[in-house]
Image (tube, rainbow, N blue to C red; front, side):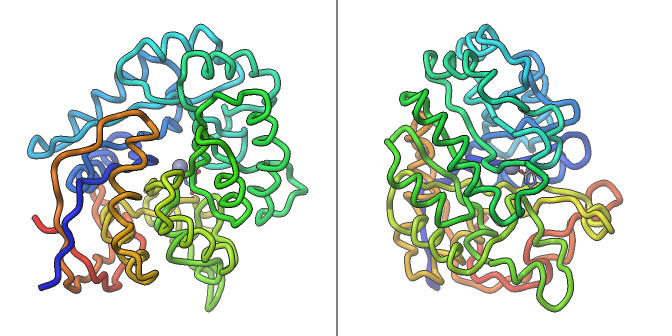
Length: 344
Ligand code: DOR
Ligand code: ZN
């Protein structure tokens, strides 16, 4: 049987929630990944070191003891985050970044940032203390077309940040456009990007052709095929600026199959298998290990993992749903066949 052995990956962009949802999804990730950057968009959000410590403990308690898994914590940037908050975060051993959500951009972003220039002293402190800034890169103006929101964020906001803070390490999260790929490629080595499995595997037809398919709805929204191709090219190029971040964002099935469905694809159940699918389609399985297991750790200045995982080339059927207490969680590719399977 064909196998593929890799250094164990990390997930550099993950939502795990709390309570019963956390108990289900964290073990899917911990089975695959050694570490994950944990998004702070809870309700209320994780805005200070103490809250992050409690959340980290809750995650550790929910993780099965058979796994050696480390949650890497992130603080949620609000209009009130001060330079002193940044200093405290930099001094802690377990906070690895701040996350910028423009207010209104996505799930639980209501307490996000409304006036970016007003936060420049706080962002200057991140640059000074060398704490990375992770960015949901979409403008939120009601009149801007949803398919243009990432490109306009880059043109109007990110370019400003880059100009004012040339030494700030930035991750442009879940890039979805050729515009984002071009920007990151031409920027300094302080600027990197994560890419999700859904944006490598699908274009916007997946959401809209043959009926509305809510399980493909996430933010930033899937774009047209030319953008998907640019993302595949970037991910499989071996350029260390692009690395794995699933943005796995679980919502109960009934909250997605809804007249106002939540944004987010649940992919953590098959993190590495989904990327293997995309890399194999591109004829680039030899580039998977760098993307999944090396470049993110290097960017965050953490040691690369030493454990190995092995994938087998064998078909398996994705469940129609997972259970969260008594309720259903529908995974990306529910009921479909995947062609690579993690051993063990
Ligand atoms: O689709 C998304 N879901 N995009 C985000 O930015 C947030 C996430 C969530 O938390 O559900
Ligand atoms: Zn996210």
